[in-house]
Length: 257
Image (cartoon, rainbow, N blue to C red; front, side, top):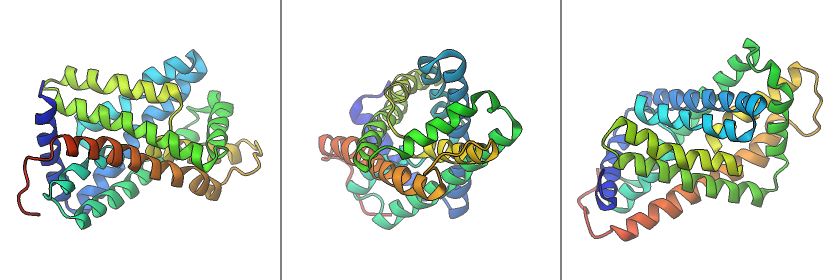
């Protein structure tokens, strides 16, 4: 495996490459990542129904494993691009462009899987769980959702960071698995996963005539996705990214691209 200092250098180079992607590639790779995370979310829900919360937590890491190994762009993991910015290797404009386009792509991909999962009937046995999951998320207070978002992306970015240090596929899978299982088991909030859970719950509620007061697109966006996204940025870019930049800040300070 790479040393932490070498991981910082590799993460910087990855950030540079991500900033150079075309708009089309950012969006399409974002859609794929959203689909991968949403598929893991669907599997996790079924795991909860058939085997309990621990089983669901053991299933969900498959999503990030697919993102990292198959190759795609995930907003939460891309928060680590802050290291390349702070090392003055990319511009703020390029960082924000990547985050925005990837975020949009993630939402599109996750929403597509939410529609397909609901209308295919694969979640029929989990109707109550799907709706309850979405309801519980919008019932969180702003500060609760924010803090859970912070804690979540600390773990997600640590998973991405450690996977970058692994030199084999098995090593990358092992590095990803623990932190992601932990955040799901603890009930932390992941913005891209919620792009699946929220729409799936709203659609399932309307389709099954389960009337849940306050469960709507507006409440999901404002009560959950907004604070969770802010929290994810604080946890991933602010805590993990900035911390490792400060630890390894003496290296690599060439011109911006």
